[in-house]
Length: 300
Image (cartoon, rainbow, N blue to C red):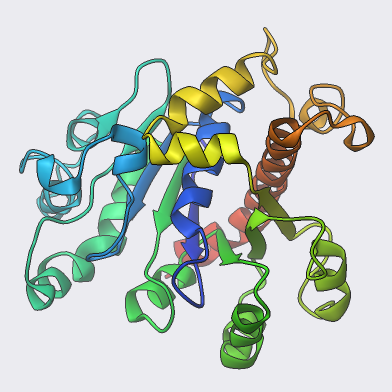
């Protein structure tokens, strides 16, 4: 039986590496942990969601696929697994589904025709995948806050900039108090900076602990792959040597599949290790917070 989870990626400010973090974690879940992952976005504009994975700009997609088509089928109560896949871009040898964003040019029309039906579409889509990953609008956004209410895990994306961290805890304290299923994620992480995970956890211990904090380190090889729109190929090659022939178990991922932290040999090894450890933590939170969230949704 498939255990479905909804994971919402959100940031207090733009420019926190949110979209790239979603791509990396989704790819690891699919390739290494064998999860069927649907990736989608709610951004109306100014978002580089599709191109790093496809090499194509959103305007190059056909009009009969993407979020607009998926919402239309959902409104007609006919969004089956096959139709969902036909609305998505798929990638050979993976269980990744990429649902391109809206092609509607008018924001009021987008709000009326898409946003108001998005929760229902996600609910229908999650019947056919293991995880729905949503790249949500940053900051004070009604749709993002509504999606958080229904999420199994909320991933708050941060950089090591003090002003962004202050913005989160001073501007969104009520949000952080309300939701107990929050995972704090540093993108482009540099462990040598003063604002590292250890100090961050000490300063904000009311909210942060070792289980709900992770990092995606900066890696020049990854940055080049993102610029060249070959992030999936690059990660597939890096992860290939870390796969096991039998089913991957989370305990094994924590243990002998990856090198111990003391013997990192380079930037890419450190990136892969930390990105995989972070993905495991998120999956563990999905297993616990997800059950509670599903019970809550079943009562509404």
